[in-house]
Image (cartoon, rainbow, N blue to C red; front, top):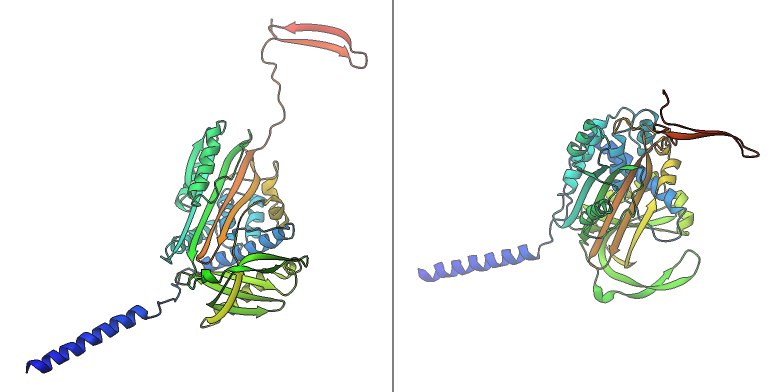
Length: 410
């Protein structure tokens, strides 16, 4: 009776081992985790995407080299500023950012808060951090309701600094470096006497490809420039699982990171890139993403793509003004009464970005900095102490009278 018992025990053991091996070799669940958002929040994201594509294309037409912007970082920073604007300044910024007129600031802020809280934790295999900050000149009167909105709705670091000390620049740059894993160590080099506040957003991303490239396959391959010339660059090449979409005048491919919530979409035009920019509209971007999202599975694809790494810095004043945000930059036209009773305006909006793409994955960072200055008052001269006075004829410099006042009422 013992032998059958031993036999069945052996069968159960082997079955357990086989099950364990099967579980180890099973394909991991690569279904992206859904992010729960309200209908209004989806409108905010759609608006941010449209703004981002338009800002990118208007920036790209003036650039000859590599460039990278962060639509999310710019949108968050400008929305922080929107919370302190009023009148035409508010309407121009709201319309440029694409928010519907019936969408309240509270709804916009809550949409971002809900999105960011889930983005940061949706994929444990991807590192994503987003931070906001407000640095103001000590003594500059910032309204408490605005500060409260920055801390509660945007979880911003708020700090008053003596802008006249060199250490203030170090603190601001240090915050940017700390919140981009050291990839963007400097965003400002000086603080003008008129500067009163900086609104900042920092975004950092690090993700490994879901299907990594074989390092042994990387070698120098041709890369064809828009001017017709050819160069040789280190290029990755592997059979990886990808999704593709082909549209009018371009091809697009999507490579996922981690559990596939995040991905890189690569768009290669049939013509030159400069010729393609005017065609690349928010509607074309929507077409590409709809085409990719409509596919049920990835296809093994031989992908070749160059490794690349660069940083980029861009003042965005001109591009934002061309998109309709005009009054915010006018010393005598801006309305930021929600921030302070003093007359202030936006002196600059700048982005610093960094990206590195290799066989393992991608590391990217962005910092958006919005600088505010006080409106320069007319030059003043106070004769509020004993003074000399003179009366002359100007063409001959003939001195007619000269005297001094020690006491105006004596």
